[in-house]
Structure formats: C-alpha cells, structure tokens
Length: 171
Length: 171
Image (cartoon, rainbow over all chains, first blue to last red; front, side, top):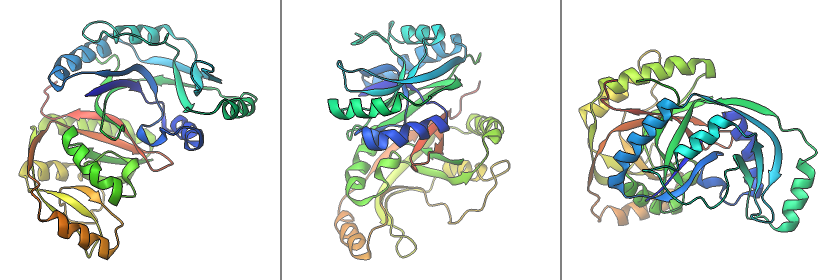
C-alpha cells in the first residue's frame, strides 16, 4: 500500500487553500490541504507496526512546531505547482529528516520545501496568470503544528488517515 | 465547527465500498468509506480539549471491537441510503452510547444501525434496482476495529481527521 505523512494546517487555512484548490487543483477531492512531510512511499501492511512504533518515538521526541506561512510561490518550471510557502523551520526540517531514516528510508526526489499546494497540473499560462494576481496579496499566517498524520492511499487515489501522532507527548 | 466520529474499515473494504459510492453516492469525495459512530455535531474550537480528553478516556476503556459485515441493506423509505450492514455488536453499541453522554450529549435522530454507506440520495427506482442486484451477492467480511477518528468538517463539507484514538491502549 502507499503511505504518506502530512501535517494538516488549522481549519481556516484549509478553507482558504481549498478556495483556490477547487479551481486550480485537480487532486482537490483526494486529500485535505496539507504540508507533506514524507512523500508517498510503498509499504506492506505487515510493516505497519514497525513504522507506527517508529513514528510514535519520533513524535515524542519532537516538540510542537511553530509554522509561518508567508507568501504564495510556485515550482515552475520543475513542476507547475502553486503553493503557500512556509518559512524554513529547523524543527520541521529535523522532523522531515527523521522521517527519511531507517525504517523509513527512501529516496527524496526533491529538496524539502515545506508548502501547502493550492494549484497543480496548471498550464504555464494559467500558472503565471494566477500567480501574478496572488503575489500582490498578503498571505501571512502562523500556527503551531501539534501533530502529524500517517495516511494510506485507496484505489481511487484518495487518502485516509491511519493514525495521528501528537508531538512532544511523553507517554 | 462540525465534528463527527467514525471508524474507517480496512483498506480492502473501503475500496469495495468506493466502487459503489463512485456511482451511487454524491458525497463520495467528501470522506472515505466509514462507520459513523457519532453523527455531525457542533462544537467550538475551545471545547476541543475537553472532548479530546473524554475520547481518550473512552478509547482506553474500550477493547478492540470485532465487526462483521453480513449483507447489503437500505434505509428506504426513511432515507434512500444503500449500505453494507454490520451485525449488532455490544462493544460497538456501548462505544456509541458513551459518545452520546456528557460532554458529548446530543439528540440522536435515528436508532443506531451500524453501517457503511455505499449509496445515498438515490431515486426510489435506482435504489430498488441496485439493491435488487446486490442482495443476490454475498457480502461477508470480518475485521477488528482498533481505533476511531475524530473528524472536523471544512467549508467545502469535506472531513479532515483531527485525531485518532486507539482502543484499549493503557497509557
């Protein structure tokens, strides 16, 4: 099965992101607006217990993470993805790195640029047009991530949450 | 915000349910296939900590729940909903009841009939036609629910998981 790990921002930011995704993101209905901290990776169901145990340990060792959305940006020409950009944050980078160590090793296709996608698979023209309009606006939000989610993908490509991991909870 | 509480069945059952929902459930893309154990209810964000604390306690007190899908059924004429029916299970009923006690009190519109919706808002003709075909087939699945999810609803009516609660974990 395909697994992935993500942080869901607060509801107001998800609602804002969806107001753009509805128009500009064909994958809009497959998952709520999110910050991917580990891209989709393949695992067998019998590997889940080990993965979950590792994620619990990582979550316990990680303090809640302050996050700061500060602008709209895009990955053109690598990818015609439009996104809300999140300021580099050492705690988030450290979490991302731990999610790419054994038993969660796998190749990273791109450097880690934390973001919330608000458009993808856009034509060059549409991307530049929408980005041109949105870059004039202010996008400033701060929030504290207190949890991350392990998700799995269904056959229709939609994602379901398997488990939530609370940051910094000593249990 | 609107909150709801649900159990997601295993991936293979979600995939099966989606194969019908894709055609017969206009709310298909808003949530993964699930067993509702508490219908949508209104709460303020500042009530969340109390709700979460209560749910943790309920989850700890509840053993994993064996569930048995045994047939296709429908709620016609009350509701033109087609569903996978789940055998009555005292542990599940007890959990449902605890989720309707303070601080989670609210009116129950219908008696609790555990089910996984595979079609809704169907015309009478379509419901009878599809039900007539599916009732000839065998739907037999057993699984153990090890967790439930607290969800919240976005402005586009889609649901995001807030937190997972593991059953019977003494922490």
